[in-house]
Image (cartoon, rainbow, N blue to C red; front, side, top):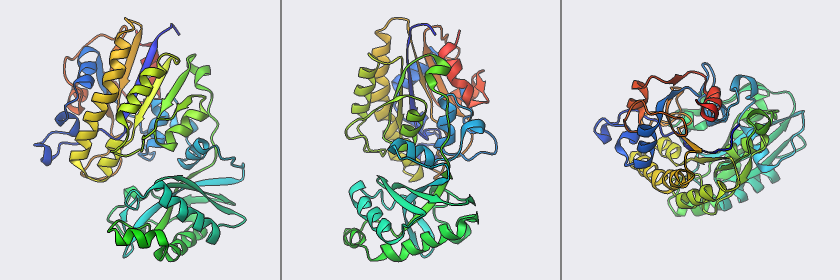
Length: 398
């Protein structure tokens, strides 16, 4: 690899469909994103499929593709990636599950995040679950906000469903099935009794906030083995994210993780802090990878205004400063912007369709002088069907 500076910016779940609220435009079309538009109009724009056919449409699968690893070969589940982020020691006989704190009312999944419960409140609940539900083969681990983990020793051949995929639906049709599912169902059911009168929920009830009425177990897997990124591509990289899934992947492939105060993984994240950290990191690293969860959360919540606003914040405070810093390097730089997957506000969950991407920089010649959005990408002549090939293309494009 020749000496260059690279930046990859992931507005998670940004891709969408035309929305009535936006006059038939998508959030990317409606948002004021002059820096992303500059990248698309001065470089290459196209589409990429990050979710292989038949695989779940999660960020775990999609981000694996984006960072250049074939999910069909390396994917073992979402929860092990988050365990890696926390530095948990997971045995070969252990399974790791994502453990959401959720709001279930009358057996309907009303909220996959228990009102985006605070990390401090959630910690008290996870500690209570360890006192009352954990045992020789089961243990719970604190995470961030509603996102936590559970480990389980034993035979496990279960099928689970992410809670954000079943919003507004009866949970009875989506509880875990298969070998080992009896224990998981029991834990979910018992958690409902334990959490009903928990002091944290009493306070949230008084404040009119969504309660953490139960846990939901999903995303299970065992620890994967991934070859180091530097061995594959010959460059040193760092990731900036507020999400353990991305932190875990970064650690597993040998990337450094840069923590930004105020980065929340939600629409109120510290956009400017992430942008400043990315600019500073370019002095030390060959590649800086910036992941922003906000558009995805807005899509899950069907909040069109938040999705548009988050895209504008990402463009102004992250893409803009990074692009300015790279352009000051002369010709020896390249930047890539793309969502990992769509999260349409109309369905409130991830979908597997291809997403738009835009690349600008050294030896990247403009083809379509159009803004960055789904329509421009679909009309382009560059469509990558295997997302795991995007990284090599980005780093070596001639």
